[in-house]
Length: 334
Image 1 (tube, one colour):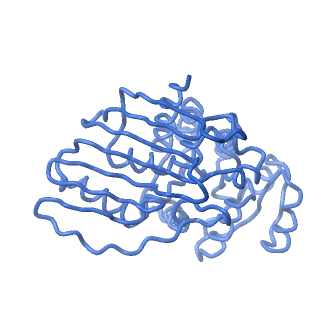
Image 2 (cartoon, rainbow, N blue to C red):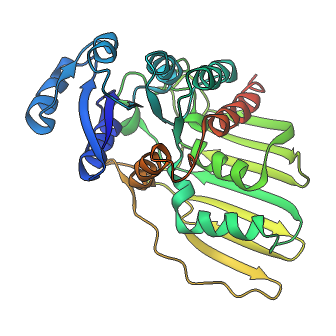
Image 3 (cartoon, helix red, strand yellow):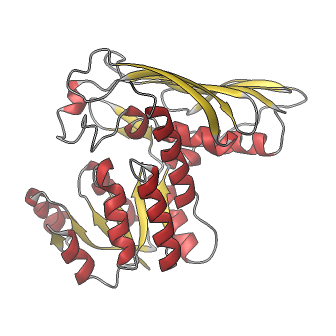
């Protein structure tokens, strides 16, 4: 049995708790949150110890193997480092941090402590993402000429009023960190690092945030080819799309839908599109929806990795690189 603790018992922390409890190879030992009202959920529903202070959780349960970090974005790096210092493995929700230097510190500490850091980038498990990785890795689409990522979602006052940290530059970081880092991760996973970045940003109607809600970003890939990310959270009422279009020397394709869950176009030389397994539905937050509900795959990977059967699907270095790409884009904010 792999034993888990959770720091942060909001919506995503509760999701971690339920997935851990439903995995026969996992055991949830204790949880922590600064909100005392969460104690009832921990005591009654989870029936495990609850702590208001992270230090007390870390000190009291040395039997824990893995600590899940489910706190606001701006605390991910700090809490991951605390868990590593106590010799726990870490499962960190995206993003790994809000700046590259803190993520480098996590990577350095994990290597020193011989601990694993699992970054939650669950969109890698979606069938279209697995298919994309395969055809690009095997060169089926040929040389990549151009990649376009479009992310058009709804995040209005209904979303931002739910949590005091959302909309804060210091704790949230902006839509590329909070909403769209999954799709930047997919792009990086498929095509590698970027350079020669240019960008324009605008805040259309989010007077309740400290950052832009929309942007156009273009760049070159280090491995060759050009790319762009066009994004907005100012879409009215509900999500429009998250898509990736790839133009290669042997063909073209587009994976779209609200969260890159379906292949909309595939025309590749001497290639027949295979039937893919259906994608899981998105995470449903009531008034709005997020990325695919693939968290259970993350915990299966944790179990298999710590059992010596495989390696992390998204490791600390890859989590760092996504943060690095976003930070370099946001450095162009005026």
